[in-house]
Image (cartoon, rainbow, N blue to C red; front, side, top):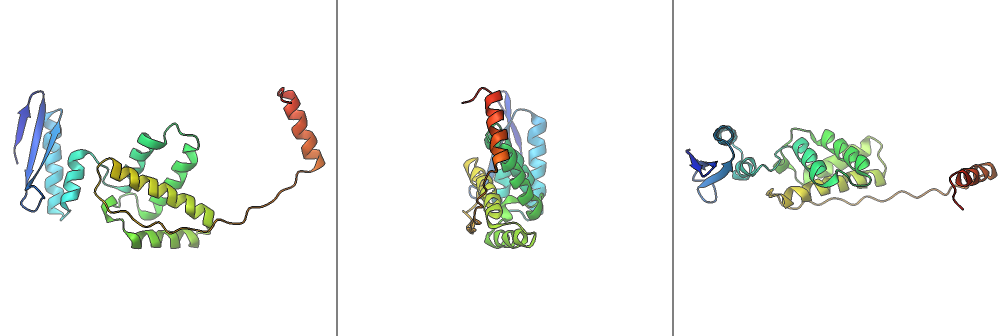
Length: 185
């Protein structure tokens, strides 16, 4: 498992006959980073992790659900309108699935269990739907950045009936006064 200097960077090579090409190569800025990656790859392989995990380590693709949440927030949600609620929904999902759960271990059974748990906690159909949408975005982002995972089925949830609310005369007067103070017609 050598490390080679290539120009101003370092290439680490992890050889293993069970990998698609018989090896995984990754390039790093420093020799220390290359050595750290090789050590992580060796530990991952001894733990019986898949070649996809070794590739994820090499490419910097998030490995755990908490890592994926941070990466999706940074790359996609940060600065978006409604980012706060998107991140809160994603955090709730990650907490239930487990922050240290490897992304590659997610499957349809885990998703069904998540939906059951959310229902048990008293979440409405629309709340569950929004939490699943956050999870779906995280997983599609995982695939966009090079993660190897098959698409998972997100069970649709029924939206609850909306409520009609009527504004009282006092509330109407208060709103009109506010609009007048703000210079709105």
